[in-house]
Image (cartoon, rainbow, N blue to C red; front, side):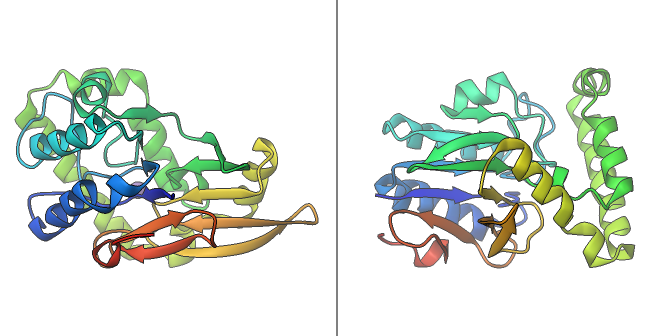
Amino acid sequence: MATLFISDLHLSPERPEKLALFYHLLSGPARDAEALYILGDLFEAWIGDDDTTSPHHQVVEALAHYAATGKPLYLMHGNRDFLMGPEFEARSGGTLLPDPFILDLYGEKTLLMHGDTLCTQDIDYQAFRKQVRDPRWIQGFVQKPLAERAAIASNLREGSRAATRQKEAVIMNVDPATVSQTMIDYGVRQLIHGHTHRPGIHLLEIQGQSARRIVLGDWYDRDLVLVYDAQEPRLVTAAALTNF
Ligand code: MN
C-alpha cells in the first residue's frame, strides 16, 4: 500500500487535459492507495466556496466520489486556493489540514506544508501573503460579487506573473535556513512540500542528523505524484501511475 501526495495541479478550464488526468488519478490509481494528500494549489484560483463555475463544480464532485469510496482525502491550502472553506470541505468529502501539519507517515514523523512560507527571501511575496491572509481582507473580499472577485484574482495573478519574471530564481525558492529551522522547530527529519515547482528529493543534514526534503512537482509540465510506501519514495508521472 502507498500514500500519494500531489500539489500545484493548478486546475483550470484552460487545461482540460490536466483535468482529465486528475479524474483518471481519482478514479484509478488513487483508489488503490491508502490515502491521498493534496498539498495546495489544486486549483489555479479559488475565489470562494460559492464559485461553482466549471471546472470547480466537476472537480469537487470527483473529489466527493473518491471520498465516498472510503479513502481518506486530505487537502491543504495553497496560495491560489486558500479560500477553500467549510462548504468546500463538506461538499468534497475531504479534510482541510492546517499548514504546517505533522503526519506520522509509516512511523516517520513528517512535516507537510504547501511551501510558500519557506520562501522567506521573497520579501514582497511574504508581505502580500500577510495582507491577503488577514481575516479582515478575506471578509471584505468574499463579500464582493463573484465577477468582481474573479477580476481581482485575475489582476493579482497577472501582477504575480509580472513580478515573478523580474525575480531571481533563488529568491523564489525555499530559503535553506528557514527549511532547517522549521524542521528543528517541529522536530522532524522529513518535510514534504510543493509550491516551488522544483520537484526533487533532497538529502539534508540537520543538527548532525540526516534529513530529507521532498518537493512535489507542478502539473503545468510534469504532472508528478509522490508515491510513498515501504520502498524509497518516488516521484512518478500521473499518466504512468498504474500500480505500486
Ligand atoms: Mn503555490
